[in-house]
Image 1 (cartoon, rainbow, N blue to C red):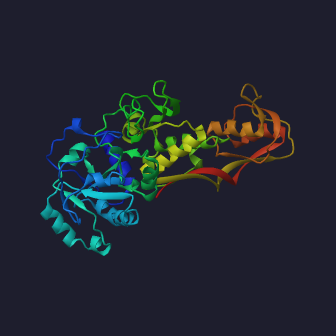
Image 2 (cartoon, rainbow, N blue to C red; image 1 turned 135 degrees about the horizontal axis):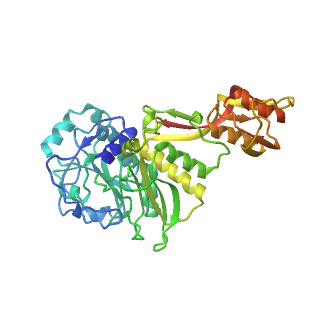
Image 3 (tube, rainbow, N blue to C red; image 1 turned 60 degrees about the vertical axis):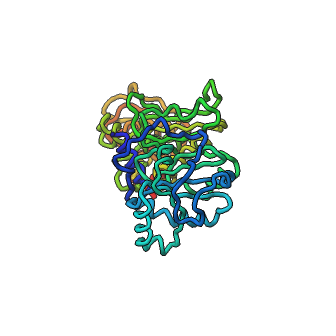
Length: 416
């Protein structure tokens, strides 16, 4: 339940509107469910409304991207997305066909569309498959919207409504392939088995905490049997996931302390265990990710792709930029003989002021360090308890540390 609760929260970051939940009291046989890459056998008959045709000729749609958008009349986010989907259908009518699919009856839908001024004003008239049982058996779900992409007789994606975009439709239409975040309302706590044993299957899956799985940061490896590329991480905070992917895009030469994190979000405690709660926090808030690709890319490129996946699925954006923050500034000063409380013994031997800045940062006793000396020199730094003791050592090398404001690189994470 905790993992499913997290998936609901993650999805709410994408949508500001109420999400509906599937047909009550219907038992689903998950053995009948289709997976990405499976052949799609369409129903012999459907009950169709809001369409010039009385039924669907699936053969005529073989060269179009078919989008099945499962919805309910009580689902606010489903309704809110319909004008966008109608506009997309109008623009790409030669390349795609959207069917909205619901288990409710014709009378319910007629009453709904007749009384919905929002849909009338936006001229929404997408075809509706009603009284559906067959398609929901093939694409079972607990929450709507729930979306399936079908192209040339194969299931190409089972995903979220936000990913029905012109870019994704054209990519699938032009290349025959697409890898989108997987929406799985019945995940069993494992991210494996997404099609790595089948060269026709590609997939992306973002999930919550995985019981029994150890913490794993970003790993990119080639499967020895299929040759496919498996990119994954398990049981990490959202902040950590963003951070170590950015580190692959471009390595930073500083310690990524919390002072260099800007969170423009509604609930910052969902993103990192700032209060050091431990296992209970990770059980409720950690995320896990797996992506299968055919093509091996440079790690920096793959990390950028993973970031795009996270941004899309979680409804966030992240970027690095220079901002003015409180910091400890290292600057030149006249050399003064060491007159500290105790001799400098042990400690750290630094080869430059840049490495000195890292060592001071690792102590977490003072604000993040901004190096304005930028000099190659041997420095022995012993123990210190406060800024006065630190400066007693640094002054002997012609360096002083002062509190102030300076422009430093920060990582920004914000909700769209």
